[in-house]
Length: 233
Image (cartoon, rainbow, N blue to C red; front, side, top):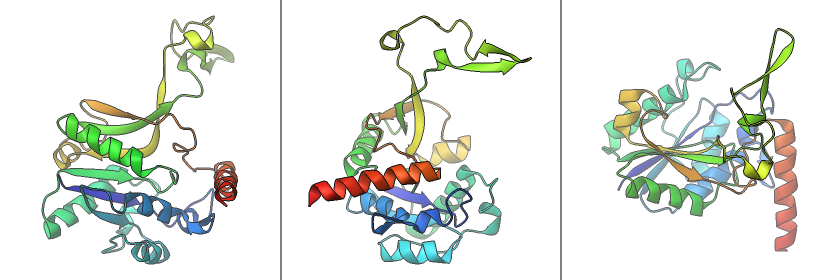
């Protein structure tokens, strides 16, 4: 099986300037994901799609393929991750031959492990190449969520069990952005990662599924990896 790993990394970041190349415990953020992909069976190449020369340089040095800078029309705030993925996929297949799967990896999940990536690939293989997407347990259960309408609160989900104890609630999960694996055919024909039957890659570890979006997320990541580094000494 031949899988292309794609890391999408724009240069602009409003909440955390230069986030994708900012050093996290001595290593650029994007390098954490490149390192996690290196040496995994079935991954034929790791391609980084970026509009930034500094990101391209760091990614290439870390072992990733960076054949071009992403076109401007795919580098806007409104640009679709599907369009970015198809652009990279089309280029790769035209130059290196067809692949069985596209694995989309976001650099904002630095603690995603090789073991989890391998598990996701195995799920893809063993489920007739159905799309595999990573999920984590939801911190806030939808039955306990509300919306505000006309100055009053209403249940977000009708008939949500208000009085259930937390341990009695049905399990709920959220997308964590760490892993998306799909066939080229499904991606192109549906223009979505979310159509059809989807197999869950469950990630129970809160650290591994951390998605760095805010400064607080970054500070938490720094605290965790600095503590882990000290424990390894």
